Amino acid sequence: MPRGQKICTRCRDKLIPVRGSRCCLCSKPLGTSDEEYCSDCRRIKHHFKRGIGIFPYTSVIQTSLYQLKYGQRQEYGLFYGEIAALYAKKEIQQWKIQLLVPVPLHRKRQEKRGYNQAEILAEALGKCLGIPVDAQSLYRKKNTKPQKELDPSERRNNMKDAFSIRRKSAQRISGKNLLLVDDIYTTGTTLDAAAQCLKKAGAGEVFFLTIAIGSDPQAGTPDR
Image (spheres, helix red, strand yellow):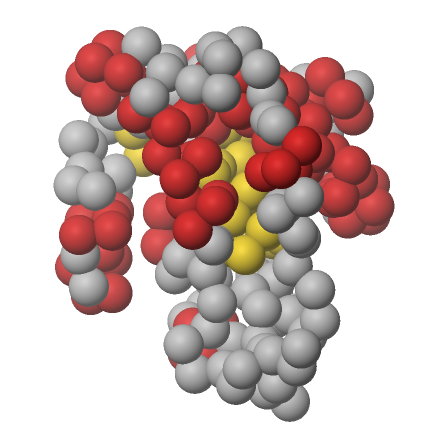
């Protein structure tokens, strides 16, 4: 598809948001499970309050998010931010979000890539909903390994003390309900680490939104 074009009709028709039973905390699809929470949320005490993922992590989503992150297709971020505003507006209003916070990349990684895809998503989302974006207060002080290469225990160790708040930014987030914005939710380890850092700095409640979300490996197959 030509650069600058957000999405073709054929691919747009393949983008179907998560439907059916979801985890009450992270919104992960539960398939035919009768549980209220996914297997991860049943065993982990999260630092975020709640969250929402817009699309199941299918091959179509995987390919386009890869191009957004590594293929310089920043227009995909604009599209996904706009469509996230459409699908998640109700939840964001219910959560009384006052500030959008994109999950930051480490400085070296952002310099190499040229941009942070989460910031593009947050800016598009904020523009649609009239919510300001704070891409400065939270920063990644640890150049972490890619989470997809690690098992759950390694992911937690990888993200330990990965984030920090800039010294003069605490007042900006103090007492406010924040929405962390990122591209993918799998186990929530990255978002948890970011939420913990923000809460320690005095934020009110911390929620999250991601474009894609994985399924619960212990859930049944959803009805067709």
